[in-house]
Length: 476
Image 1 (cartoon, rainbow, N blue to C red):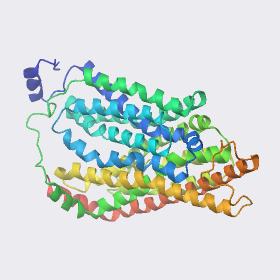
Image 2 (image 1 turned 120 degrees about the vertical axis):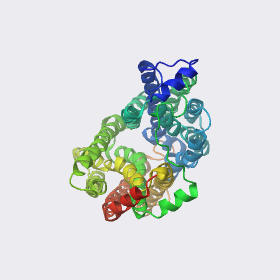
Image 3 (image 1 turned 90 degrees about the vertical axis):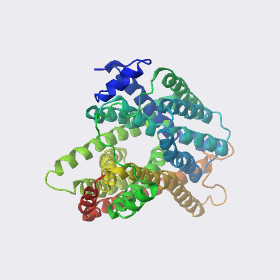
Image 4 (image 1 turned 180 degrees about the vertical axis):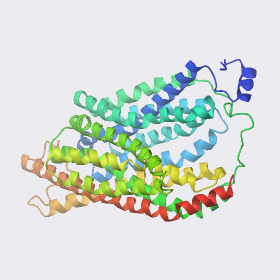
């Protein structure tokens, strides 16, 4: 195995010609684990706002729509728009520098969230978090592919992907503990600050390998398609658009629940933000991780007798997911909520692997990167960006309707604060009940979208085989 030093450029080239991995085993492992930690913090910093949402809403007197902007579009806008340009930039400049600088940027922006004074300043800080996080995954995937030879890449990229679930669970457990012991401002500061040091560590300790170093000698390089040609091929694939529609619907509902489900548990069932994160959301996150694995495992086995398993396995799971989620939100019994939510999360995340599998399988090899970029652009912008604000508006409308029909009409609105010292005990009770009703039914309506997405996943079965065969005939 080739051990490459910073000054061993010639040795690096020779190692690459043999199709070997870059650097020693120990150093490669260090790089992979460091990038996995970076990816973990990537998700912790973006999800933290959902953990500490209630005290922010109360302090700033936010509507659900405004909180939806902060948890959705405020992050997703630049994160989505800059994803493709940064991916293109990483093909030409140092990927290590892009990652290091972006980690420092989004970490500093997370710290800045703790010093904000209202909706506008917090929104600006969240936009900056999105700008920084856009520079994480594209260059990191490229970097890992040059550190590991093809046979080792699936395992390496799988380890890197652990950052998604690890970040989600740690955000709930760590953020929940912090909000129990500190203020929401301190939670942002303490979570964001270590990221600045991690970014410096990336810049100072990770080497930039030669591009394509670990590819085997004579590896086929597919002809790069122009964006116009790639777009033309993608547009022609009905399956691609069906799976994009289904996945966007899932994201539309899923990202909404990420922000608002914790509020439902707090308003309706009386738990604190910290208790909600640790006792509920962390467990649901683990269930979702298991569901993502089970989705791939079941699809792999179903593929032995069905060429469309990638379509109908997640489709059936999502159809079943909706009723479980709906029951969890409308029940007043906490044990029923826990059981149905665990089942719903297991079923919901079965589609994660399938969406990438289908969107790439139906296009030729030279167009796959572009197809995934287009797919993610649509899913993130509409699902992540538009979903939470939309359901925030729905929650606000339901809340205001409840208030208008109550004895407290004209005295409180949807953005009433549960910590407002000027509100009487009766008004505070009405404010809590109105918020609980609005959030509960907005979340319940959102869950019905999962079943609709499942139907579209099943429908992709009708064109999947034809589009895959067409892509294979087209070749590279």
